[in-house]
Length: 457
Image (cartoon, rainbow, N blue to C red; front, side):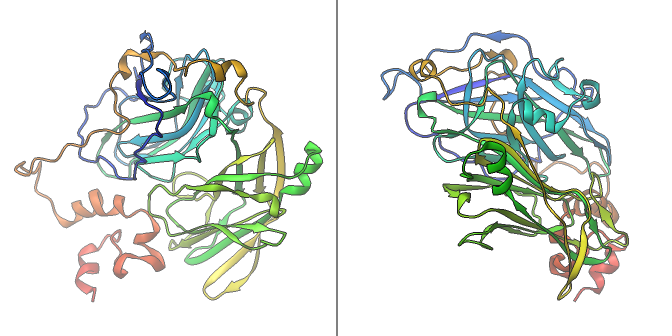
């Protein structure tokens, strides 16, 4: 399912926002079956343009397929797209769009011999999918902000994610329907490609995470760690610590209300590089143009904050549990990971916020040999595109919204309890709607919503 759109010399435009298309009503086929197509047609020729007839940029869109989610259903399938590319691809930007229900997803490029089987959605355990193994086998190509509907990850011109020849894109997706009615969803991925001669650097993923989370009940808390990257990097590679930061994206769930990334060591010690307050289900990635020189410090420190209004402690996990992760795209010889895996400790109270800290375990992995720069042969050849699958011809990167008929009759008479369960509670599943940050002091999720509204002053 692949649409190819050529542009002429000028940069691709139209960075997408984070709106959705909630009004599209789709049929309900069997869950994520028959997504994709093996029927392919030859790629089209290049457009004439400022480069003497050669296309220098293109976009490729794939539709993963429709599938229903039952009321309150939560599933964690894997999904794949085999590119059938005979040559490497150099990705300047990635756009992921969906029709709701996609809580979070991490996307990887792996050899097409890995996780072999039909494309579309499948049980992760049936092919022994593992995120660390996937990153080591290839690279990270995209990470979705929590519950975003449309999101574009774009890096500075010439800084790319490389998709080697004979690759497959694979993800473990967390699908969650918070409504008391079934929905049908779908997803699309668009790769914006540039010519190999325009590539300046191939980016490498880095991850920071706080795994040993214990978020106390009915409290606000912050969980921090400091990771010395320089010592490990220079000891492993024998080269100078010369990382540069191009892109950053945090990830937490509905209780999250704060994220902070800081420089450690050097003249810029303690300088904030990224900060996010609240959880808004928007696209929250940040591109650094120009990239930040991390060699001015010794590493990175990070903090995740939470507002746990519940009556029980919350730990690391899916569903109603929490996470604390940041994806970074950097210039680096290693795949770097800094994590708090154990021994998180309470260290004090700042105003009404309980503070926790944990030691950062820093490790690194060699990059895949396929993650090198373009060859001279690639630079001198025309821009290569993967073959187009029949089902992806003319597929738009973002679904076209359809307005609801204003004259349509309601399916049934609704009471306030139905509106609360169907609309307010699912839509208010993040920190803007509860705890200290509750919208106008209202709790839209309370069973006695009528009393909450009546008593509100």
